[in-house]
Length: 120
Image (cartoon, rainbow, N blue to C red; front, top):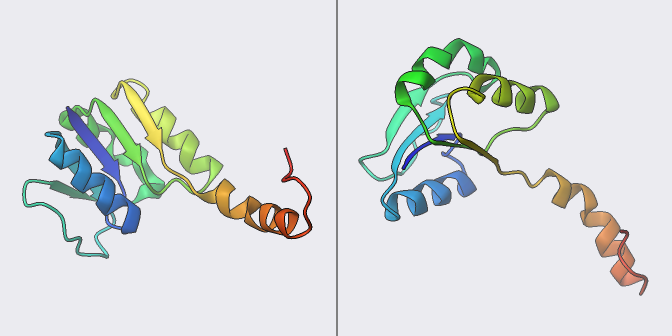
């Protein structure tokens, strides 16, 4: 399967990319180029700005990813742009986020210390 990973150079992204390669997928990562990732040699790399995905739409069409994994969607605008750009390109979008986990961490931890149930 052809998979495009947005990000892919951070802690979680590199692990996702390695696992996808191990499973026999054809992987391309799209990142800004600030980091030099330690990834398998057959991973293709495209440099670009996550906040300007629409400017790379033609490049993405040429890649023809079946799945796009977004490791760096932090804002509503980035999520909307992701959907807009890949709507007619990819079959599936997967967005990885820990924002809600960290946002609720203090609530859950405080609740367990007080002996109360976590919020629902």
